[in-house]
Amino acid sequence: MCEAMGEQRWHITFHGGAHGRDRNNMHAYALDGAPLGSVLDADLPHHVRLRELRGFEIGPDGLLYVANAAKARSQILRFAGSPDRHGQHRFVDVFTEGHRDNSGLEHPFMVAFGPDGHLYVPSQDTRVVTRYYGPAAREGAPGAPMPRPPALRDIPDDDLHPGTFVASVRHAPGGVRAVRSARFAADGRLYVADPKANQIRQYDGTTGALLREFADPALVTPIHLLPLPGKGRILVGSRDTHAVLALDPATGSFATVVSPGAGGLRAPAGLALGPDGVLHVASRTGRAVLRFDLATGEPAGPLLRDLQDEPEFIALVG
Image (cartoon, rainbow, N blue to C red; front, side):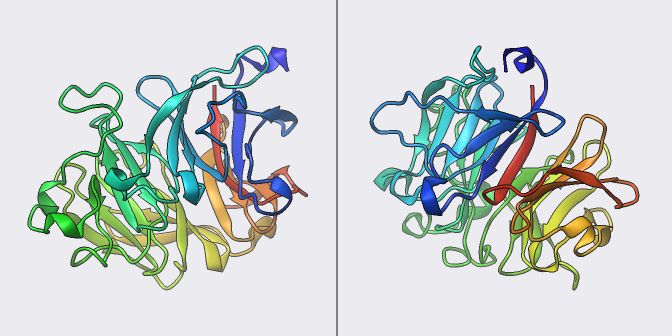
């Protein structure tokens, strides 16, 4: 374990569910798939319980931000960015959490930092993307909901959750029907997966204005997104066709990257590139992490298989 502390490793969150597997459900694996144990410090204050961990990201302050998705305590937690000698990230604080004055944060799916350094969080139950002042903010308290963007200024205050950046169709015309992954691409725009509408929606990263809606007959229930660095394309997991597509925002076209069911892929979840550029896909109901050649879509062998739980998010850290 200690030899791997300074090296790259995979972090994976799992769906959880029965048998208490939703507790502290982020685990580390070596690049060859060897298990390295749980990732997060379990020595926590009484008001923090690690339940249904979902998306995570290293923030601009170098800390690890994690979506704690349990409905009773929807929180965005911060941990040390580097593991200690035991391979665990020590708890720092609760960056923001759902409550009466932060009602938009309920069952958060993931975390994403924008080019502005602020935090964006899609929540499954409120069906919105909320925006919070980032850790280096001076105009507001870090972790506090930010003012609405210009695109939503005509919506009455009572119709929006505090901090709303992307509204639900229940709250504003043209809003999303549902929300899962929300990620910024190299063009500075925010891309949001709307699984109920079978769409990827593109928003101006500054004004919050809806710019385009992308759909294709091959795209059914999109959940996870992965902008490809330097390529302009965005990978999309099409859950119900068991495939991975690539969206070209310039043309609005989709291309198949991983064919339906290739390599045993079932319900693609988290997407990530390995250090060798190989695409890693969490096969959720297949309980595996599969590898594919990004250029050809050919299976490159599994990283992990026969997992005891369903993998959700995967990212290379270190």
